[in-house]
Amino acid sequence: MLKNSRASLILGFLVCLQLSLVAQNSTISPYTRFGYGVIADRSFGAGRSMGGIGYGLRSSKQINPMNPASYSCMDSLTFLFDAGATLQYSMLNDETNTHSNISGNLLYLGIQFPLSHTVAMSAGILPYSHTGYNFQITNTADEVAHDDYFSGKGGLNEVYVGLSIDIWKKRLALGANVSYMFGIIEHNSRVSYRASSVDNLYTLEKMNLRNFKYDLGAQYTQPLSKTERLTFGLTYTPKLTFSAVSYNAISVDPYFYSGLLQSDTLHNQGYDIPNSVGLGVSYEKDYKMILAADVSWQAWSKTRFKGEKDNFNNRLKLAVGGEYIPNSFTRSYLSRVRYRAGLNYSNSYLQVNGSGYKEYGIGIGAGFPMIDNRSYINASFEYVRIVPDIKSLINEQYFQLTLSFNFNEFWFFKMKME
Image (cartoon, rainbow, N blue to C red; front, side, top):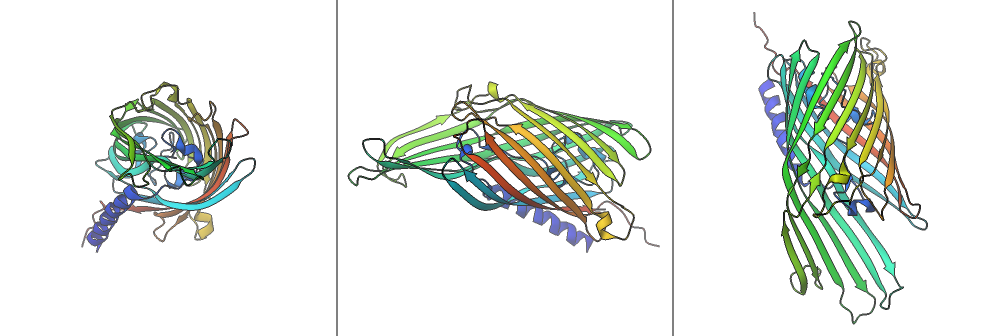
């Protein structure tokens, strides 16, 4: 029976992996027309409802790919599986128009297991960026009145494998992720002339990007008492240059089969992901609470996009959050629930009309224990507001519900028969 459950779980992991590779992302933001789209939250279930923290988070009950050094804290007999999906309600408005939309997606999934008492491994898939929009602009000022339609889809994903090792008395741990980052980002536009004698123009831009990415991490834990500790975390991601193929075409045929006016295929034009540094600290009291804070910096201003620099702004993100358990050793179910909350702030790496936007987020959530009291169903509810630096640009806000299943089982425990 146990072997069958493990086989089913592994099969489910592979099926979910395939689904996640083809799933649609959950965004309708016009800002995703620029750059690589909106940068995704890398935290798994519990961290998402705590403001997206993770660099200093070291928990044996959850997978934390934000800092690969965290994997080795798990019990040597435990296997972890985590999968999350999201539902999002988005609202956009400018000075005159308002638009709303509901979307959803399989968000991430991962597994984690020990290789020895001091070494652990993790693998999974998570998004790096999302592109998704569809909007129209009416232009009657030109000699020939026309409507401009814009749409886009795609994004970047990473399939990662990570390893972590405790190198000193369960206090100092080092880790690394090796990820294969890949994705196709597609932008479409149509110029629809109101005069029937003028052909509509269709433009297609498609970028196919891929390469290996590396994340390095370290964590140091300082005990404060038998049940309390501080953990300091550090991560570093070196600059990445994509192996890229981009295709551009203009046609009077919406399917680009005929009427092609211009087309170009460019190889390795110059697409980069920047150096990134993350710092975090967490305070943990066993079976009672976690308090944590993170800061990250991404040097986007030095990266290339379409072979050119000066397209982006450096990005700073701050996050704080916590978890509280009323009583882990009671029969009262609500007292054993893990209650969570967090805040975050970041500026955009994108430049829109020479400017950008600020992003503010607040989240609450809970971890609901299952019958075995080891596995959890995590729920988080986040509100995010995007405030542009220029008032004439679009304001965005969205509500996001994320549900994740955190499976925790003693896979490597051997029962003795008498």
